[in-house]
Length: 240
Ligand code: NI
Image (cartoon, rainbow, N blue to C red; front, side):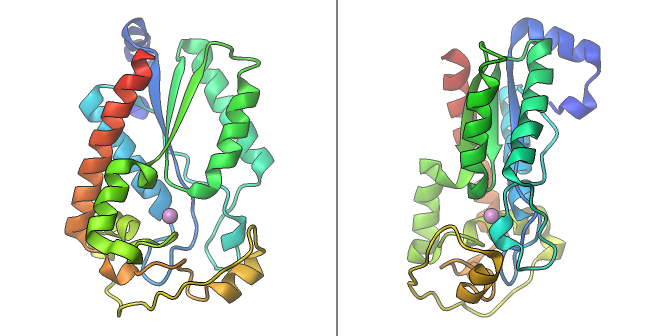
């Protein structure tokens, strides 16, 4: 159930039964040699929508931007600053809270968002004391780390991973680009890093991953497994 495709009366009757909502958020940032700029929000949106359909839970419009400063050395990346993301979440949550939503289940597609999302939810609680929040970063769900480990072993890496590139390849098969196998060599690096330094350390945008292993058929499995895990987790959250 997409919020965008409901009427206000649909939302009013939903709120008589349930107070939860799925909020997908990602980023618009470089994703290595064959990953799409929209990888993180495309993945979060697909998982949230599939889980929402299975659970009968409303899904908010996707937030396509996140905290991507360290990727700004690559063209096309669009980054929010922490204060913008904080203010954006505050406005979205307090609008929904006013109507009666209380449980906010965030399907997150980008690791850089997590600290700011946590800070914004802490700050929102002073104005919306009955709200509760869950941030599910899909690639960290145990079901997903298990599947990624089975399929890709130590070549999953940290950014532009074969898992996320598989997922977008499944959703957008016309955008698939095959690339030669990528070398994965351990490297130690400071964090956080400037955009310039990031590009020096990771010249093609990958972080210790081999996205040449991405396949649409793997992406179909990741979507199914992630959606099912979110449905289960959402049910526990809604009962809490
Ligand atoms: Ni990503």
